[in-house]
Image (tube, one colour):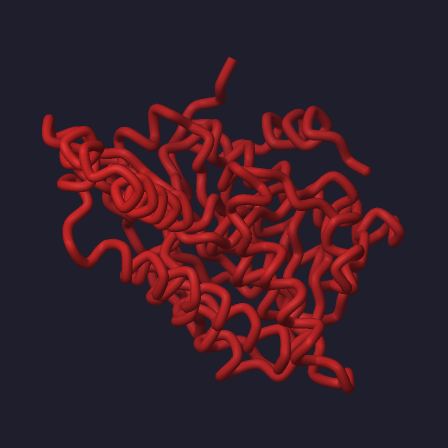
Length: 335
């Protein structure tokens, strides 16, 4: 497999005259084409730079999956030929409803979808990755729990994120303690007031909805040819949706854990050519994130792209006979 440093060295040798700028875009797209040449099916890339704290602040947290991502996915899928596609996903997750929209976009166009996870696909990204007909993961890659999270504003205006299940448990604990000893009500009032009257039911609904999405996608996707598809799908979603088991929304769910619950994960390391090509794409993406202002990339192996940049507007040029393409990002190499 080509290492990150080998891809970095190759990148540093690629320059665009007359300013001698690094050709981040050209390298990535060349690597996408290589994956398609090996697999025989178009590649779609859906990636965000969620580990860069500076970009997180600069883009206002827009690295997560949201409804705005629909436009990016439509842009890079609607001209692809054939009924099969590979989707490489690298994301921290986001809104379950947005994940549902994205899955519907992909399923409406392709009869067979493989999701490639070279590194990390958490939360709603895990949900999307499980919606395909096949799931291919690098041996050390990870998915995560699918239990929904709520952003709550405290009295001082600060924002905290809390698991829906933890909120439910706290309500029920308060109900139990106050029922046994009404004098404890005064101590619980400040805690319960910050939630609002509907939040308890909203949390119950959100947990059910996330599980419903994934259970249905597994039943009609990966497990559709299995006699016990519904039972298998329920087993997986009950596992991934149990916050009290994981105790952290960022918990690691690897190949072994998924296989133990009946998910037929394919380890890409077992196919040397695919492994090398996919990981080279991943390295090229990480180098782009590290050396440019890009924080979210939608792209395919046929040249279509939509790239979100921090504090910079994307300029487009029309490619004769093809889709609009962004100009190369004018960035300088990192030391």
